[in-house]
Image 1 (tube, rainbow, N blue to C red):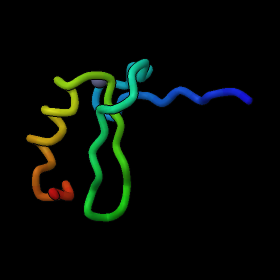
Image 2: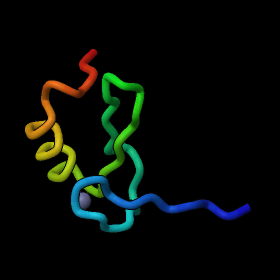
Image 3: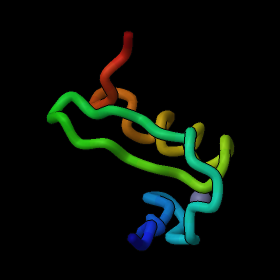
Length: 52
Ligand SMILES: [Zn+2]
């Protein structure tokens, strides 16, 4: 069993810590390496992000 590491959807760095994710309205899930990347992506794609 190998755990596949994902790449940050903003800066493409390997995601070492999980938990920085966003769900899009189209069902896609985006992962980020840090709170900063998540925040920026959220700002740039506000209309596509599924908000609770
Ligand atoms: Zn990043």
